Picture 1: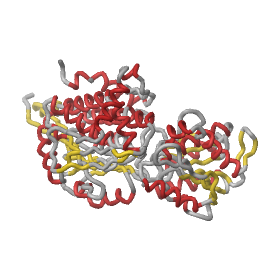
Picture 2: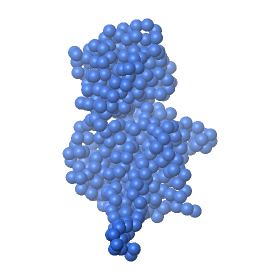
Picture 3: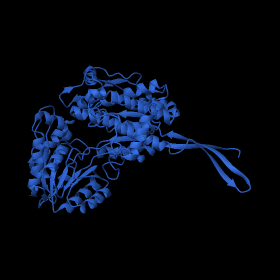
Picture 4: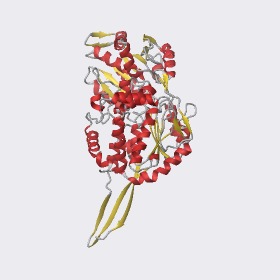
Length: 551
């Protein structure tokens, strides 16, 4: 049997082609079907999850001094799982001890191990779906897709990009410089990829795998050891990931401590302790701007921090030739996972004089009520409503919804759904010049329909907001073909990816691996892009040794 790299070379080559082509491609099917994952996969995943409840989660050989765990499913029950926990010095020491052997293994070994981990993660996608569902509050179909195959896609994308960047320089070359009538100078040169050091991945509550896998696999595939710090409310998905990664490392003959879990308890987090350790050379962080600022200011000098932070995503409605389709598309984007996505829209800029549509001229209020009515229609069936909206990951989001009602004129009020801690979308109407409430991120199912002078004013406000406060996505509905390129250019200058006239089954808050770059890194919503070359290339260095050779 060949090496893990040899076994997965076909998968890597396909991923490299996909990176270049930027079309649709995935080796990890997103449909939770027994025909794809095995006839018993669904039941096996449920049994495995149920069996983990109320137990001590074991990670063989993992350093620990105590056990922690206080996860509560937003669907209404405590997981009662405890995890091995160690303090920052113990985790750093273990990671550094594993580093020499892992660094010596070289790029083919690093990438081969990562590809094996990803394929095994894919096989356990049903278990991961339940783990993500009951730590984030996502409905199962979304938890399966986003927590399983889509996260695995992003991890694979990072591995492929890492391989492409590491192999830009050959392993060796013969340098020959002519010297006229004298013998040429001949130098034998060799280049080696050198990892940066310990990498820290700080996970978030809402998308523990999707947001963590790019950094985890970008660092591991470039020879760095990785400490994975999950959110205390969403440990299980990353604990499953770390345990599996350690199994693959050990089977391949490398130190399992190349990947470690930094589990902690609410109120006793060790994140700050880890961030400030000089041995930590890379940090991947998803979360609030406030803590992102703290990470950047307190990390050791020279530490590279890759961040995805808060922003305010906007839609500008200038006109449409499919009013019903537009309203339905926006309604789904506002409702999906109750607006708890970094790509979910919040502000909808509409000319106060209304817009022209295929159904005649629509006033500002008619546009707002059209969107609200589409939300009502989407969520009319309780089972479907729970499946689309899921539940609220954090109780504070429910409080935020209650407080937001006073921020504008209520177009659609929020209501609890049939299951779990939940709230349907709250839609408020405001005048752009009379309040700045819409300029702050209101995380969760809260949106503003903002009255502006005209479409150009809406674009200007949305782009300016993105530059000042950050934004990951923007959307435009327009029938003016001359204006669309100008709007695209304005949002590009603001560092925002733009979607135009979405009315079908693709939504502004969806991001496809191997095609869409997630975040541009060009505004305050984040300083990195998943997963461009810059995301991986600074995780390693190239060192050379050379010696003369006879001509």
